[in-house]
Length: 269
Image (cartoon, rainbow, N blue to C red; front, top):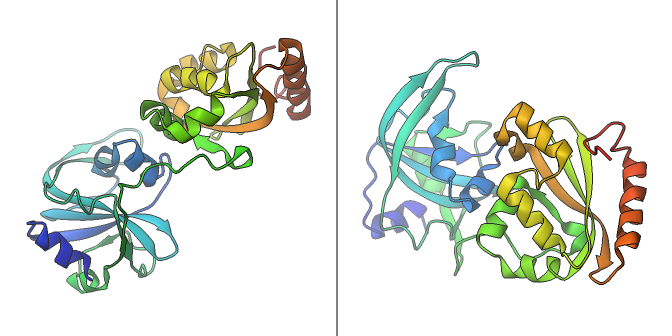
């Protein structure tokens, strides 16, 4: 069934609209959606891409699959000239009546080339709903220790939502973790021990960005707290929650030596 037909059944009549095929990084649009900030992410543009009445937003999942992210009414646009290229800040409003589709409808669409903003209505007939999820798409269940790879934005979302799948597992293990500054490639090796689980330790990073660590605190003081958006979290080694402090600290030191995170990274001790 066409996505437009389902949108119209929801009581929304699209006027002059564009299809926005949302891709990109820092943050990935799907992460912004999980964080409840997709509208704000979409409103920042480097060109006047939304000279239309409505925006039909799709977020890329994989191959030809897209997640329907809502329909937005364009209310206005301001120009911001900085040392960077001119930015266009749009003001939009997400239309009501589509909660049964937003974050749930999976759309099949073969993107024509590299274009991200499509006006021609002929494409609308190609937006076919291939599945509708029962629940709005969120960060998935815990993928296993070897599959942990989180941006700071995704970590904040997990903590804010108290995601039970992640919280239950990570609250019951201590161990060694790695924070990578993806803007520079520098590493920070940290650990959770003394009865404190990885979840409790990472909750501090979700709240402050630096988690109280001197190297990361100094970095955010120099670059601005928003630099934490470049932090990526992964696990190096898992330990029993009852492992001795000395054992965990020894393993932390091992990984600092392996990754040379004191000499070339962000560890200060």
